[in-house]
Every structure is written in structure tokens, then in C-alpha cells.
Image 1 (cartoon, rainbow, N blue to C red):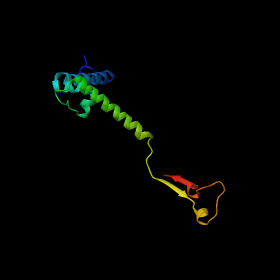
Image 2: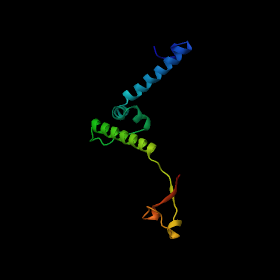
Image 3: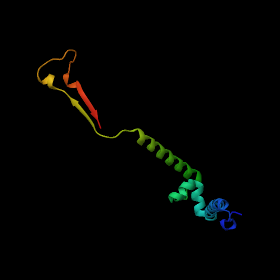
Image 4: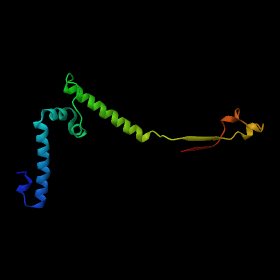
Length: 120
């Protein structure tokens, strides 16, 4: 039914071709015990990434939990990278009044007075 060669109509042919590809992919995974174990633990992304099932002493649940923890860390790192600003910062401090011996009213330590601040 889903074989692309059975359909002459182009729209049905492309739908059948897509369905046939999914069926073929599922068969490859389900018929191979090694691929099926990887799929059971990591899912489709794990197969696509070429991941392997780890130590045989660990259960599928442990491996699945580790995979979820890894995905959570990956998502947190991605979110952090989006908000953490990196770069160089410059601050210009005008010390001319302090060096000239002029006191500034209300300023006890003129070295903390910022005239301008710029960031890159």
C-alpha cells in the first residue's frame, strides 16, 4: 500500500514515498537489537547522533535518566549562553581634581568619581 511505485499520481506518490521511508527506518531500528536498545534509551536523536549504549551493568532506566540529565544540562548551557554577556569593559576615571589638590564638595574619595564609563 505504501510502496511509492504503486502510485502514479504525484501527490500520492510523494506521500507514499514519505510513509515508506518512515516504515523502512522503523524496520531497520526494530529488527536490529543494538539499534533498538539505543532507540529505547536515547530516542531518534540518539540514533542520529551515533550514540552507543553504555555499560551493560546499567539499566535502561539509568541510561535514560543520564540522557535526560545531559539534555537538561545542554538546555541550561544554551539558555545561559544567551543571557551571559561576555566582552571587555572599560572605565575612565577623571582624577584631575584630586591631583590638582582641589577638593570636591560631598566627595570624600575623589578616586571613586566616574566621569565616563563605556562598555564593549
